Length: 172
Length: 308
Image 1 (cartoon, each protein chain N blue to C red):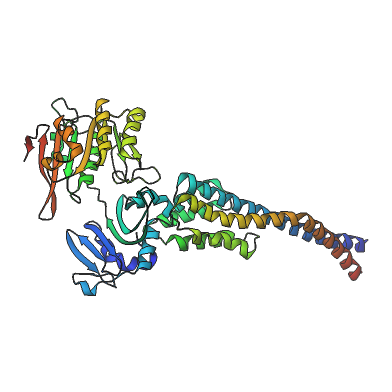
Image 2 (image 1 turned 45 degrees about the horizontal axis):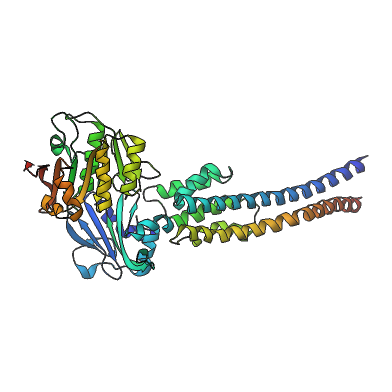
């Protein structure tokens, strides 16, 4: 009886691990989509509204996913403080903090952290196009992640079940 | 105003911000500030010195960093202004720019590159500066007179205009508060940020920010039904035409123009008819004597002095 309960516990644990890995992958896709949405909004605000970067941060603090909101608000607040830090440093610090826990790869995080390096052009359409390159990069990453997701989910689930069975046999 | 790396160097100058009038930065030349009409140089430690050899110099890279910081990394947002050779930053401070001009095929200015000369003019809001002249800006029925402020650059035209607007809007002992609409083409009058005036322009004032005067005046007349319309720095035939149209709509006008006297303004081709037709009831001439800005005189529509 105990052996049977043990078998189910090990199996459930392994399947749980598999499901958490699948959820992580889902979360990565969700974050990538959100980052694409943020950059798209930035593009629109640049090309249509000709807003400055701090103004865009203020807009994003009310518009984007709740996870990112406080960080964009912080960027806006910190650079508007008297004697506040420069935008470059504030942006990097806030985005690093914001993406610290996000299940993204280093390369994907760097796309947003280094976004400011793409700024400095004098024409709004060109500037919008320029940050569009970062969006294209994220789009590609997102597409790859979505395509791989189904197979990866199946594989993770199978591996977790098999690992559970294997562990049980080993422990028996 | 300055990037973090340079901020310490400007701390002492910033402490004297109340009297600070201009900061002039030129590539490979000493950084200079104008405090109470006296030129000082800023040395490497940030101290103000009056000897040129001790002054710090800025290379092209530093100037670019300053410009980028002034534009908040958003040069594109200031492209139209840069094309005209200036940009207005938060607080209404105007930054004059010079560098190399890129021309369009049709000989229009397309852009400015290699910006190597900056003249940062610090805006000052001086409340009450217009109080002594207010009695002359109302007629006997307590209505606002059409007024033209005349002054050479740097004599406080915009500061005076801003305070007159505030007084007209809030109301004074000489007349009730009226609805004032301001076409703030260069964001210097109200110093708007995110659409909100940073300077006090009065409780009955509507501000159209960043709009060319000609279009702005007609938009405001149609949309906001102002009793007084205010514009800064008339400078073209088109501005005058729009002003005449606005006057025909029953608005009272208050405007500024560059010049040293009423006669000098009269000699401007586009102003000749305006003065002959008595579009303005009052001419307020500002001047600078011994380094201080003061009212040189107030004249009525016929050019007779009301105030010496």
